[in-house]
Length: 377
Image (cartoon, rainbow, N blue to C red; front, side):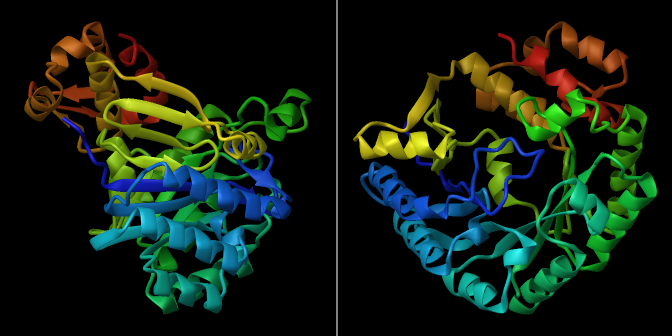
């Protein structure tokens, strides 16, 4: 059966500054490449052949709000041509607090943007400086005010386990996010990825990673504090006020197909996963030469698709319902889990009652370590 996805993602790789912890496919300080990038993105999208209506559209990066207004207008025009928005759509744009002006917010409203994800990370200037962010608390509050006035739904990305960050400081950050009226909050623990400047600093002893016990305390504080403030904890790192879950991200977690374009973008269409070259210059060179920007392509087997659906399902707090999982994948949960079902439940990491499988509170704390065995066919 041919599937026509109802979600699309465009990756806009440009940033004013490349933060030391970031390992995303971004390019900083190269605004002269924006025109060539826009031409390349249009060429890639034209390969769709015809427009495909979607329910969710997401412009991520990078920092989409960094683009000049005229360039961002062209991106939106392309996106809405190739991915017409259905009634009741969710249209998300990622933004840096330093970029948000009343003029930009008015444009976003006119384009049909319904949700902005602000890369806040922290409200404390010392933590922001440690993360090499180019905004400060005053700019965050100004950006939030502009968005609230515009009526666009507000989502905040927050970060814990930053070197030098205390539990009390993290709790103040969470309280600030709640008091500012965010409808959605994502909490991510800092991971020092190999190849980043932060990793080099850690190797040289210039940066000390947060201890595991403090990281656990920070994550549990987020669970208790945000749920206590009326947020639903619906995915390992995601909290929302009722009715404000990220519909786009739920497409990924539900194992559904989606379109994607731009450097480093990954798409899943009819069981085939494709990933574009991460380097923006390589992406541009490939398309300029009339070649495909894809660097990886694989057709998922039925078993691997089922295993991925299992892991993504467990990332959601509601867990995986056995009957529905069998109907959608053809695989019984018990068979697919194998020995790990008993192992993880006996360790108190999973809760299983023959019909539902879900992470326990202890399981949430170590979830990343549970997935690799489950993804082995």
